[in-house]
Image 1: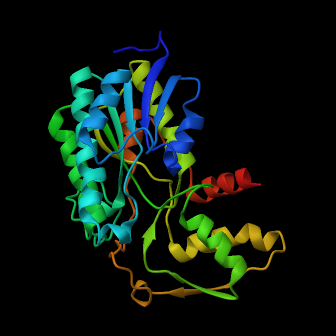
Image 2 (image 1 turned 30 degrees about the vertical axis):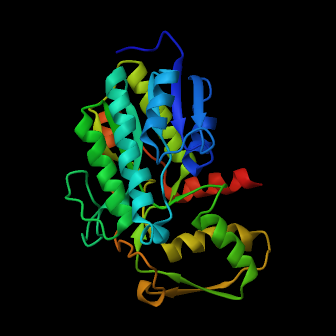
Length: 296
């Protein structure tokens, strides 16, 4: 299907989330963006989702909303499953009924992190906690509808907005004399801006009739580091600017227990997205530099 001739009507859920905010910047110019936040759409109410999709009849749905409080999900599984599993399935049912695609974001947490190499899309998921289980249930609910879909699994998402590791560490580095950071969990910090740009590239491929296969893809920045290494990179501009900065100390994950277990290996192999859709990702360190530059 070639939509190049007309501007798209794109429905985006999750108005104030990290990825949704970047999508609003990156997708400007593609057509009309209908951005629905919590005030307009309660994702725990399937009928509201159906009503909104039917009222707007979009050309494309992007579900950028999620219950992402990993530790909190352990104590509120019903809410996590309503938002991360049931809602995506309802969006997909409505997309299938309209004959339009759905783009949805998932997570490295669908894996248990025990594999020594980066995970591919063919690896069997085995989530450790409620958050990962709910996101995996969402992936399966989408696939079961038969709707055209892209499920984009990402990891360690940060941006200049909201609550995330980058903003927390920028604050703690300047508040504390010493900071212990987990050094034995490995992944790719991924800027929400990178996810939004790649999403735009995928939409443009689809619009111009150059779409790859629909399905599940991995989408993270290139390269890998630990939370400790990520924090070292966050500290670099502070040190360069002569600002006070905590001394960093590597610690094992076992020294920082959390309600939800984290995968030790969060690395995702993103080569399929490049092969199928011709969309490549930047190095994590370069993307971090770009995000920090935007904060100034």
